[in-house]
Length: 453
Image (cartoon, rainbow, N blue to C red; front, side, top):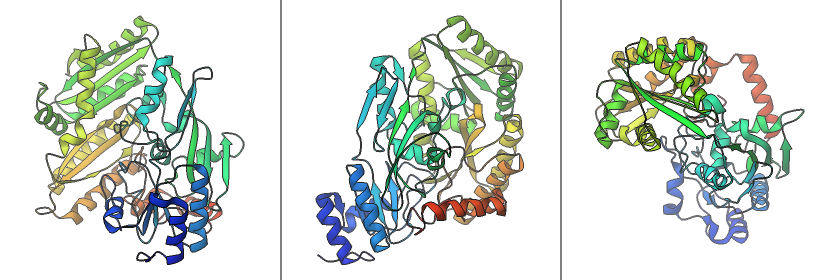
C-alpha cells in the first residue's frame, strides 16, 4: 500500500487492517476535513471514523506508536479552528459513534460523541424531559464538539451550559487508557470539558435531563439602538428577572434576517427576544413583565407572542442569523466574547465604534442574558484587507478583557484566539496550563497547536 504524504507506510497498513473502509486516504476524501465553519488548515494525512471506544483506544495507541498527532472532530461546525489540522495529522471523526440511550427513571441519557445535540432532547421529549444546552447549530453540532467547547446556547442564562449537565464522562487518555469519571475530588470531567481535545478524546457522557416546563411566554422588543437594548437587559436582570432565553440582534442583523426570510421585521431596529418558562403560569407572565417594563422605559416597542406558533416564528429569526449573514459577504470572522452584564451597554457601543473606525461591517448578536456576545466581522477578501480583519478581531477581544470579560463564551480558543491568550492570562496561569497539558499529553499528540500560545 502506498503511504500518503507524512503518513508512514506501516501506519497506513495498520489503519486499513483495523478500520477497513473507515479510513479515508484518497486526497478528495481527506480534503473536506481541513475546514471548520470559519477557518481552513492543512489537509490531514488520514481520516479515521471509529465506531467504538475500543477503536478509539487502538487509534490513540497507533498515533503514539508512530508519533502522529490526532485531531478530534464532530460535525465540523466549530467557529475557532479547534478541529482544523495544522500539519501532518490523523483526523478522528466521531460521527459514527452515535449511540444514545435515555433512562426516564433516573432522568439521564448516555450519549456517544457523534450524537447530534437536538437528538438528545428529541429522544427525551416522549418522557416529558429535555436537555437544556441548545447551541444555534443544535441540529447539526454533535455532543462531542459541545463538550470540547463547553457550548451554551439561548437557554444557558437560566439553565447553564453543556458542562453543567455532565454526570459522568468517559474518555481515552494519551496512552490509550479509558477513564469513566464522575465529578468528585479532582474534577477530571471538568478539566476535559472545554479543553478542545487537547487533553484526551471524549467517547461518551452520562447527561442530566430536566422535566419540560409546562408554560412559557415570549416577547420581542424593538429598540432604536443596541446600547439601549443592552441597558434594558442589564436593568431587567438587576430587578430579578431570570428569563429562560434572552437573545439580541443588532440593526444590521435584523436587516439581514428580514432580507433573508421576509417575515415582516421592522428594519433598522435592534431586536431583543425574551422567553420565560416554568410550571406556574402567573410567575412565568410576571417574570416576562419585568423584561417588558424595562424595555418600555428605554423606548422599545414591545410585542408579545400570542401562542406557540408566534413564539416559534420569533425564534426562527434568531436561528436564521448565520445563514442570513452569509448573504452579505463571502467571508466572516465570528467573534465570541463574554463580559459582565453591567458592562454590556459600553461594550456593544465600543464594538460598533470599532467597526466604523476600521471601515468594516460588524454585526452583533448573541446570548446577551449572560453577557455572551457574537460580534461578526463580515468581509470580501477581494476588496478588503484580511489582515485588517484580524486586527479588528484582536481589538474586539481587547474590549472584552478591558471590561473584565473573557476571550470566549462557548466557541473556544482553538486556533483563532491563540495569539490573544498571552494578553488574557498572566504568565503564572499559562505555565500552570502548560504543566497540565504536559502531564496529560506528554507526547503533545492531542490536537497540537490549539488553545495554548
